Image (tube, rainbow, N blue to C red; front, top):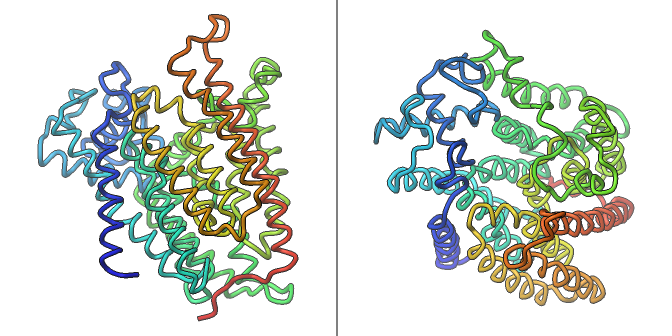
Length: 475
């Protein structure tokens, strides 16, 4: 790639994020709990003021009901570093208890910069590493460029990280590196290391853990149906050693307390109106009134396991995004923002299946529209959605020789038919008997489309497993 083009794309990606960052963040001026922005600030407050054995423990100094830390230890260490810097700039930003709900323009600027730096250090290098690799489209510049543009400018990731306020780019960037390295025979051990880092930053990376594990196992640990014990032990050692180094500070205290915070099953089946199977079927069958909390968790475990089995079986021959989507649709305690996890592998496939992938990415944006309304990000949502739609149509036109016209018209029809719901959610008052009507319909439509794409990609995976060889790069 020409260096001027590289600088131009990077500058444009940064500018787009900066424009989004000028808009409100989650929970702005909404006491007493505020939102995710306050959660991230509070974790800085907790980690910089309390010893590590109290980070995940309820105490008089750490009220876990007020945005208690519930992400893994790498998130906590990251919060500590940011909190330490914040404390040096202005101690009032992270003063224990006294800083709850702190809002100031200078502090907002600091917090926004922490996300920019995360992008610069991890996500951008990961995206360009994918571009430089030939794992997806060897020497096909237009296809690689499509993947690059999608990863740099996908609005949903930008809106959630730089608008709503989170650090998803860190775990997703680490996972991206792991995905590419997993296909290279000289760096698959490094892939295990990077993915373990990703998993220890956000536990939701479990969505990707099963396919990564199965793929590494099948690609490198078996030869002619015999296990390569040395390779298997090497992979296991890398994973366990990385876990040990990250977790060693809490092992001498109470690691069980940390695990309970990471997997809070008591929270329920799903939060808000998420576009997954359980929220959709709950319209017909009131699950939480018919089943106990424990029974629902077991049902989710069973359905998720059954739904990923076909993909896992075929993963022994070919990687896929199906497993992460199955987790989103059928697992327990799903947030609307976790749709980013199945979006990540789809962003890598936009040049291979342009219509299916771009339409899915657009429906993923539609599924989180209620969150955009809550955060006062509607205007920037529409601007970025329209811009991404133009980009999608332009890239689909470039790859028109591999596009099914029926698939294209069907996808456009589905998106066009759903968009009026987004407008209705803003301008039309729903019936008093059904106050969440528009939000529920958005979730149902998105879920239906996700299920269609899931079925399609199972078919594609079966065909590729049957007719193509394992794409491992022998260096």
